[in-house]
Amino acid sequence: MAAASFSWQRAGAGLVGAIVPALVIMLWQAATSLGWVNPQVLPSPLAVVGKWLEYLLPLQPYHAADGSWLAWACSGELIVDSLGSLYRVAVGFAIGAGLALPLGLAMGANARAYRWFNPMVQLLRPIPPIAYIPLSILWFGLGNPPAVFLIALGAFFPVLMNTIAGVRQVDGIYLRAARNLGATGAILFVRVILPAAVPYILSGVRIGIGTAFIVVIVSEMIAVNNGLGFRILEAREYFWSDKIIAGMATIGLLGLAIDVAMNRLNNHLLRWHRGLEQQ
Amino acid sequence: MNPHILIDGVGKVFHTAGRDMVALQGIDLAIPQGQFVCLLGPSGCGKSTLLNAVAGFAPPTAGTITAGGRLVTGPGPERGMVFQEYALFPWMTVADNIGFGLRIQGKGEAATGARVDELLAMLSLADFRHRYPKDLSGGMRQRVAIARVLALDSPIMLMDEPFGALDALTRRNLQDELLRLWAALNKTIIFVTHSIEEAIYLADRIVVMTYRPGTIKRDLLVDLPRLRDPADASFNALKRELGQLVMEEQQRHHHDELRMAAVD
Image (cartoon, rainbow over all chains, first blue to last red; front, side):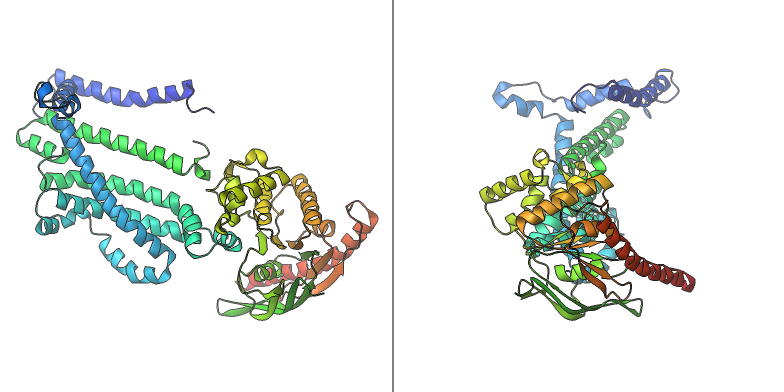
C-alpha cells in the first residue's frame, strides 16, 4: 500500500468526519442569523472568521523601509500571541522532559534510585501544576519565568512516570540475548533498554505536551501579558466574544497541529513496532 | 582430550513461596568438541534450567560448569544462545541484529558489514536485510537469530527449543539447515527439545532427563548414519525406546500437576 496514492476510502472517511462540524457550524450560524441568541454572547461563525482574519493580519500597512516583508507579515497579534505561547510550551517542555527523562531512566533501571525517589515523586505527582501558581509568582514574579516553571512541572510527571514504566517493562529476553552477545553496562542500556522503552517514553511525551498546552493557557491568564491565554482573557474584559472564540479556535488548531506532528514522529521512530503494522 | 563442556555435579534449587524446589540434581556430563547433544524430557525436567546454567544466565547452586577450559561465571559470546522466542531486537533491522555482537566488540563498520553479508547469504536472508523482525515469519526470525549467534564465531551454540514454535515443514527445513551449518562449522551444540523425533534426527547423543528433581535418566549415543530418515526402521526402534522413557517422566509430571491442583 503506497501511502501517497489516492484512496477513495480514505477520502470518504475524511468527508464523513467533516459532516458533524459542518452541521454544528450551520446550526450555530442559524441560531445567530435568526436572532435566537444575543450576538454579544454568541457571535456568528462569520463574525468569528472575520475577527480571526483581522487578528491574524498585521495592524500597520507594509513599509519596505521598516524591515523585511516576512517580519511585517508576522507582526499580526495572533501570530505574535501564538509564537509567544509556543515558545513557552517549547522551553517549559524541554526543561520538564529534560529533567524527567534521566531521572525516569535511573528510577526505572536502578532499584535503589527507585526506592530513594519514588515516595517523593508519589507525594508531588497528585498536586496539579495550577496549584503552584501562587508559589510560582512568589518565586519568579511575572512574565515568562513562572509560566515556563508551571509548564515544565506539567510536562515533568507524565514523562517521568512513562519513562519509569518503559524501562521496567523491558522484556527480560532482550536483556538475556544482549548479555549473551556480550553487551554490558552502558552499551546494554543505550542499545537495548533505551530503545525498548521508547514506545512508553513517546506516549509520555505526548501526554506531557498535552499537559504543557493546558498549563500555558492558564499561566498566561495569570502571569503574562501576551500569548493566546492572555488574549482571550483580555477579550473578555472588553466583551469581544468573537475574539475569545477566534483565540480558542487558534488554540484548537495549534493543538491539532502539534498532535499531528507528534503522530508523524511516533510513526517514524516506532516504524519497527508491532502495534503499528496496520497503519 | 579435555571435554569442550564439562558439567560437574551440577544441582539447582529454587526457593519459591517458602518451599525449596530441586530443579537439577547431580548432573555430570562431559561433552567433547563438535558433539551435537540433545537434552530431552517433558516440561519441568530442568532441561532449560541446565541450558541457562551453561549459558551463564542462572548459576547452579551446586557443582561447576566449565566451557573451553574456563569456569562459567556469566553469559558470554563464546556460548551463543538461540531462544525459542527468537529474542531478536525489534527496533533493529535484520542486518543490524546480526551485526549487533560484532559492533559491541568494536569491530569496524567494514568488517561488520562484510561478516553480515556473508551470514545473510549463508542463511538465505539477503532479501530481508533491511526488514524489521515484525515483518518476518517465525522461520525467518529464527534464521536471523542463528545468524546473530554465528556472527560471533562462538564455538558453542546453546539452543532452547529453537524450532518449537514453527510449523512442521519449516521446522524440518531449519533442522536440515542447522545440520549443514553444524557439519560445516564444527560447533559444539546443546539443543533442548521435548520432541523425540527432533532429538533423533539431530543429535549425536541424547540425554533423557527425569522430572523433578532433574537428573540424567539415560545418556545414549545415536549411531544412525546421517542424513537420517524418520521413516527408517532403526529410527523408529529408537523412537519407541525413547518414547517409553520420556512418557514415564511425563506421567510423573502429570500426577504432580493433579496433586498440586488438589492441594490448591
